Image (cartoon, rainbow, N blue to C red):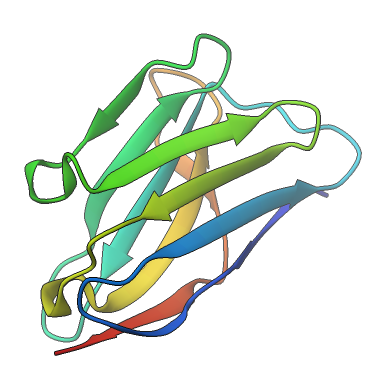
Length: 119
């Protein structure tokens, strides 16, 4: 059974950087889109960035454009989120997720990694 595991979260000062990783483990990993989501207390989960697994097309929510970069390593079945110029409002639990087909939901989720940005 395929699982996703995030890593790379932590505590950083405003203006700092972190790189999150999400590795898929298991026999067969089939996905069409990988996404990074985040959720902070009292707020709904929001999509941060997505990447088309085969073509590499990326999308970002407006609040992170120019600061975050999503990328993937097909050989390692890993997706990354490079986060620069972090702000306190970026504080959240970050999750990666896999969408198996374009018409379906994100149906495979990691356990999440905490990112805390201090002012």
